[in-house]
Image 1 (cartoon, rainbow, N blue to C red):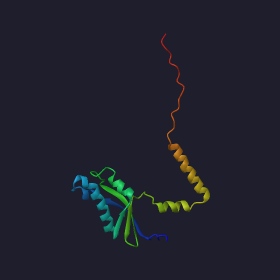
Image 2: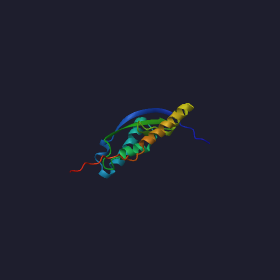
Image 3: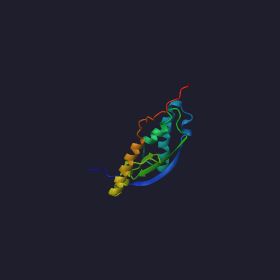
Image 4: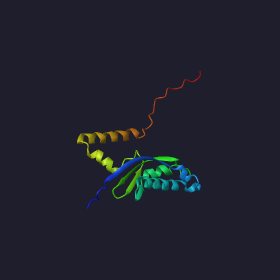
Length: 141
């Protein structure tokens, strides 16, 4: 049996202030404190029962290590009817959104998208250095 997707009640983009939360804690605990601050902020403002943070948001907070998290971070929070809030980066695309974009296209558009992806991969591949003919140096006579 397939799971039913919970319906989204509300979606907001917020800027979460983190510095005031982690500034007075021990240095090695600062990023952990920042993650908890994001959860508490979203729980308070969205009136959620439970908060889940995406992996990419967690990586963005921990990017500079445990001792130096960002002072503030912009997040996109959605809450469903069960009271579960999902928090992620605003530019982060979920798997469901990607499927919707792909399934809504015609067959030709899908083929063009695949060709474009393969072309981009080929462009990114490192090319072998080309050997150029070097002119012979003229010696002193």
